[in-house]
Length: 167
Ligand code: FES
Image 1 (tube, rainbow, N blue to C red):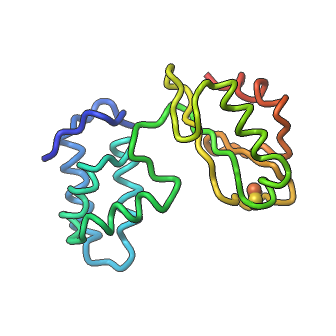
Image 2: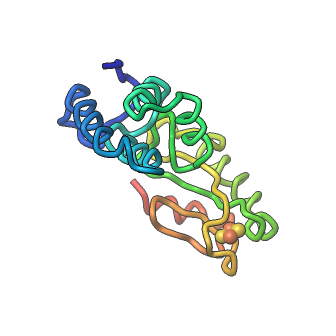
Image 3: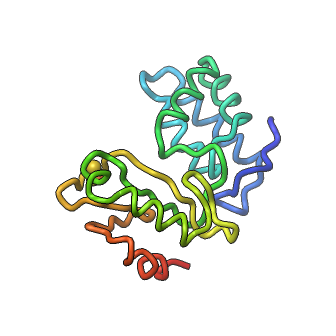
C-alpha cells in the first residue's frame, strides 16, 4: 500500500489502510466493465481528496491498465486534481463566449483578490482557483462556478461580495 501524505480526506476518521481496502474492492467490481476507469477515478478522488501519482499507480495496477492511460485521463479532465484542493473550488469559464465577454478580466481580478494564480490554492486553504471549459450557460456569459453554484453575468467588481459568502 503506497503512503499518502498529500491529500486531505473527505472522511477524516478513515485511515489510509481502510481507504485503500475500499478502493481495492471497488476496482475488483469495476475492473472488467467497459469505460469504468473514469468512475473509479471519481470515487477514488472522493475517498482520498485528490489523485497524486502514487494513487494513480495503484489504480493502474488494480485496473490492469498502463499508468500512462490513467495519468492521461486524470490530466485531461479538469475535475480531477492531483494536489489537495481548498475547501471551495472556484472555476472560471474560459469557453469562447465567456472569454470574449470578459472571462480574462475575472481571472485577473480573482488573482488580485486571492493572491494566487490559476491552479493554486489560497494559503488559508479556503479556495482553489481553476479555469473550466464551457459549462453550458453561454447565453449568460461570463460565468463562474463556486463548488456547485453557478454565477452568471459576473462582473469583476462583484467578485469580492460573492467570495465573502464563503468561509
Ligand atoms: S463559454 Fe462559458 S458557459 Fe459556455
